[in-house]
Image (tube, rainbow over all chains, first blue to last red; front, side, top):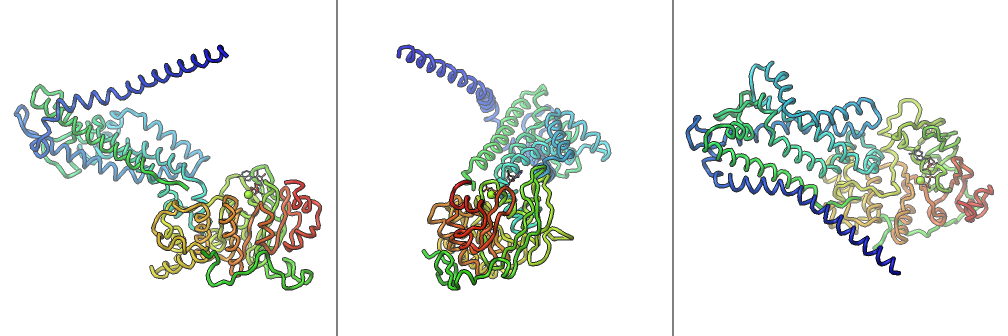
Length: 284
Length: 281
Ligand SMILES: Nc1ncnc2c1ncn2[C@@H]1O[C@H](COP(=O)(O)OP(=O)(O)OP(=O)(O)O)[C@@H](O)[C@H]1O
Ligand SMILES: [Mg+2]
């Protein structure tokens, strides 16, 4: 009896200790985000004003101006990358989910995983050689292609996972009705996986929205308005980068503001993904 | 709530036999809907069906019974070629639907499956609205082009599946909000909306409570006026109640098939008797 209660107490103590340790780890995970966000708020919040949001940069060394062209450029390039990348990624993900045993699918899956791990600067150089050099110049389109190159493997793999999670009975139910396989996949299986795929897409978009390296050799950046995707275009991360390494205090101030704006954008996308994913959806 | 399908008089269950049993026809004497000739089936190296030959009569209910793993589902899914979705399977012999081969020559599998409706053991409504569950097949297959036609087809199908009264006021809500029994009847409605000739049901009531089960059984009873129905069941009372003919499978072979009343009262084979009296399985 005594031995028993002793062991019991010991077990509870160990349990509490372990719980506390994992709790500390959990806090350590959250701390960087809180610190980054807090610091950015302190340094950047006051600088996000109307001028920052609506003006283009002033010539080197002058104070004032804003990052309006960078904001629009980022939205343009990320939007274009999503437009190019998402259909490819979702199609490829469905293909991979459909073909389990085939060698080709295994090769594609492996390639996607490797591509996921390729440093983004390498992707930038690759797109520079493949798009910028042949087309004769830096462009938003090249930037979008670089971003899409990063987006595709991420979303391909999540789409595959999500489609695989759809119960096989859905596919069988559709086929048993005499629906062609592609109709069943597109009309029944894909919508059944919709929540997860949208989440994956939003997380992927949030990832590429903040990328700087792949844009350095592709979109290049621009001090002026440029909405034509065939020309060099400003992007928020590029602007932050060049302002942060500049010697001017006013540009440092704006770099902080840009960073805050960027993290807000990423945060919004991630929260959106959470909302979609967290939506209570009853499964059959 | 009346679970009878539309405009059909309630008929007693089990099968009433106005003609003296001895004069009633066996399965082979009636028009044939489906016939299997020496049909065998393999999952990889594992043989699941062993030379099945049988005749399924038109517009009757045929039940498949037998212990778990004896090949009932495999045979059922061989009729509409659902098994070929599983890699590594092969077959021998043939199945015919109204005299046409299901396997030989250039068979349009999609067209074949349109003629054969299937209801699964686990109800599998699509994650769409109740309306769209029923309408999706006809819409894709071009059975109803106009909105009004589609509405009518959806209503008729839901009525035939004895579900209309329960869902008519929430057709556009998610099908996943229905109870298990309602979901299964929705799957029956969905199969009926494709206007099939044959209805295959694999243990359609095994996950349902007695009341929902009774509804499904009454439904089957009404539907056989129009459809040839094949039902797999583990419940011998259910086979006795709903079917006209019963086939007893054992270890991948067909042991015997005959009129349900005769098979349950005077089985020809010892193994059948052992099974229906509960001595094994
Ligand atoms: N997908 C599959 N892959 C490999 N073997 C299978 C597969 N499905 C069934 N089998 C095997 O085929 C045999 C027949 O299975 P089947 O599902 O047809 O039996 P059943 O009579 O429907 O059984 P139950 O009453 O349990 O549903 C079994 O031995 C089973 O293990
Ligand atoms: Mg089975």
